[in-house]
Image (cartoon, rainbow, N blue to C red; front, side, top):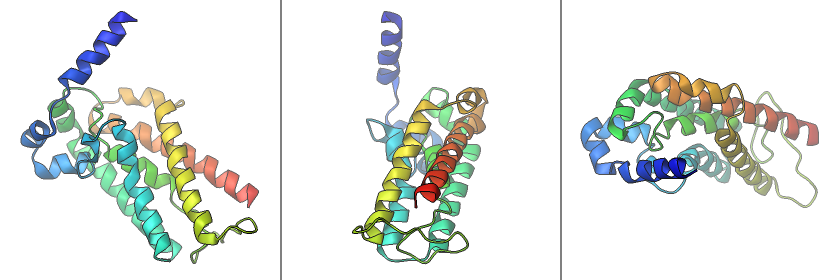
Length: 201
């Protein structure tokens, strides 16, 4: 117990400053892997990194944009997160001094985007998948914002727990090792959410 505690404390003390990471990697690569600096926030940098897809989806819902635009936005965020990890992941590990460093949250952006893809929203025009009917007395917009929050929380649970096979794939090297476990966690959360909401509503 003492050795593990000491190791964690040493890791926290040795975490490089954001300015050092930016100086070593460059502005564009560091901002890409940290989701515009969200990965530098503490505590729970992975939670901060999961916010962009949920915030984008929530804003589009508030603006009553159609489901296809929400899905397109999620696909773009998924692509950006994947490219950032694969292109700059190894450099980020060198700059941050460890494997799958906490500052790298582009993988969380990608994983969270998967969970928010192709949801049958209640308040906006859906395409191909049909719309949900919220419970009586609940406004469609409020229902959809709640659904967005559930998608966010569900991904965080799967990302933290990393059930098999996600937990074993972190052993892969570089950006792929950073990314793939979050994609699998996102896919698991997405399947569970889709099954539950379509069964209940």
